[in-house]
Length: 119
Length: 119
Length: 119
Image (tube, rainbow over all chains, first blue to last red; front, side, top):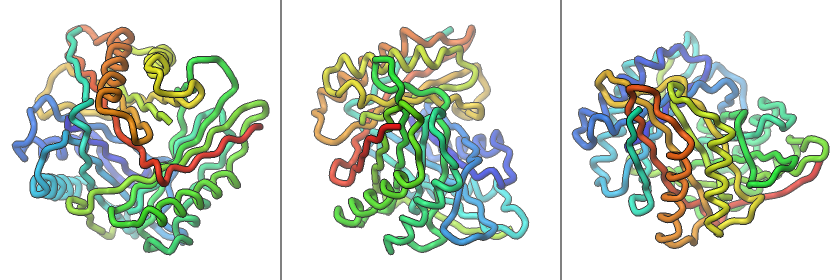
């Protein structure tokens, strides 16, 4: 951990590699995590819908899953830093409203299982 | 929020746009959310497995993530309404057993970060 | 439930069907679940990043979502069994460090909605 999952709608101009680099840097700069523990992925959403009206809308959402035990302040600061990294990386399509959001969620520490193997 | 994520197995006949329209309408009709806040996506599962036996099986699962603070009754009613919308939209393949499920999960309100930008 | 979601980076040699068969068997052998209730999917991560340094890295992560009410011991044993199944199935690419992780998370039982239909 942490596991970072960035979802973005397919109408959004984005360089996924640059976005992941930016959010990983934000996570690393928080000082909360070991460098190699930060694992992120980006998922392009081809089928999406916002609300019930028609309109030019896009969204991106980042989920940060981290082991339980961080303080509320640490989680809030981490989310804010990741949001800032996203805002610096993503460009809304012309004429579109882009919603950006970041959530943090705790992983259950007691049952978390992990192994590292080398090829 | 809310964030709705519909997963469906690739052997299921589905119009993702119609399914998202139906579940967004169910979420909006609940009266719990602002119209533009309802953000949904559909993911087709190409690699899936049910159980350990062979058999003609399909499933669809909807995850509704909403900010903490809704009552248990509100969450249950929302899940039931979304399930009804899915049942009206999805058709099981001939000879298949189709499992439909809906979960609700709370987003941590204290650390949730959001911004809206216009292109 | 349970819902099992296996994510794996695209640089990892994997037979998704074999991996899902292995983790479903581990879940079934736990004795905690009905056979047909075990629903798993595998997602290949084409856009991913580990840490902030360059390096030959891969990861796979399994999320096991199960209805609330299992004991901490049951969850830990289930995660360990699933991790063992993954380790027996996945092969790290030559020269790569492969991180494998398993989390368990509870589904809210009160609002969980489900239906089974036959085509």
